[in-house]
Image (tube, rainbow, N blue to C red):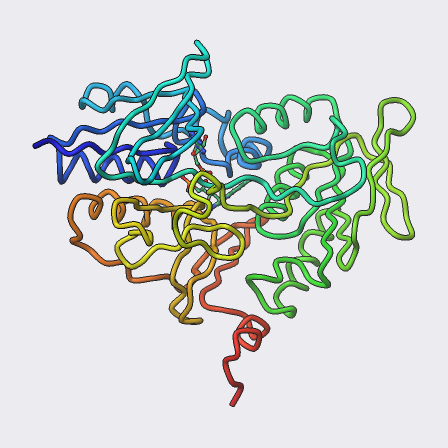
Amino acid sequence: MTEKIIVVGCTHAGIAAVNEILKYRPQADVTVFERHDTISYLSCATYLTLGKTISNLDEAMYADPDYYRAQGIDMRLRHDVIDINVEEHTVFAQDLETKEFTTESFDKLSMATGSLTSIPTIQGVENPKVKLCKTYEEARDLCDEAQNDERIAIIGGGYIGVELAEGYNKSNHEVILFHKKETLLDRHIEPEIADKITNLLEDKGIQVKTGTIVKSFEDGADDTLIVKTADEAFEVDMAVICTGLLPQADLLQGKVDQLTNGAIVVNDYMETSNPDIFAAGDAASVKHNGLQTDVYMPLASQAVRQGGLAGINVLDKRLRSIGTQSTTGMLIFGRTLACSGVTLAMALDAGIKRY
Ligand SMILES: Cc1cc2nc3c(=O)[nH]c(=O)nc-3n(C[C@H](O)[C@H](O)[C@H](O)COP(=O)(O)OP(=O)(O)OC[C@H]3O[C@@H](n4cnc5c(N)ncnc54)[C@H](O)[C@@H]3O)c2cc1C
């Protein structure tokens, strides 16, 4: 009997899963549901395009839906999965073009629904001059706006905010980077190294406001935006929210085990607490080898690794994950920042003793 697999979400984790299913189970009946009309967009393309490392956003796509159709995969782009009935093994989806609904059954399901930008509760955050930067559509909007806007506020000084600050600086924009913690990249590096990154950004002319909470966004005169903190106001043309990512896993809420932030808990085979459902990438947890616990770590590198494992294991469990050391790298103004493991603060928080 041919097994039917449904993959929900087709960016890095979804594509990696489909690639491995094609390799190991080419006869499987595979249906992919993806909300967007493109697959494989790399979110880092915004700052790479702004900084002219690549010439346009489309260069950051590496997979073509027609390739998968030619391999016999039923690729349903512009289809939104609305509900998953785990008892009946069905997925309920809407075609976003025709508005028609469809129900498909599955033997095994692979969830690769990724993440959403975590939007902070700042007054005025819904202002159209306050932008997001994850999807291809959002990135196009940012790159289009960059033609007109000169002064950019970036809210959030993690990897995404710091890299975007570099991109806008390289495209001759004035940049103010706000970060509520005392040091940039605080989830990845020690304060001494963060200070060096701050100095590097400031040397290039970027204003870095650490330990600063943005309180509101308001319309200013002449189509400007006023970004207010507790004791200052900054006039800019546009703001970009870079305050982190949240798992997009509500379709399985209450149906499988989840971390407190909603990430789907997976075992070493990417299997959830329901053996017919696998999950990978930004929608899922990952085992941190240093902390010896399941954590949430939304990274494309992780999504590809986990997605591949979900594809290999979805029909029979063959290959275990080796977990993660949380290894990341960033090129910033020609300097490389590489990190692996946990910071001292994270280790102490996790109850690891200091000797
Ligand atoms: C600006 C930016 C820069 C980044 N830079 C880096 C970097 O340099 N290195 C790195 O490792 N990581 C980076 N990341 C993180 C990286 O983008 C994510 O970790 C990665 O996209 C996760 O891939 P994914 O496939 O798990 O999820 P996503 O990329 O979130 O994809 C999920 C897919 O599922 C689809 N989907 C969701 N729900 C449904 C539904 N109900 N029905 C149908 N389809 C659905 C979505 O449309 C989407 O296509 C960056 C992120 C941002 C925002």
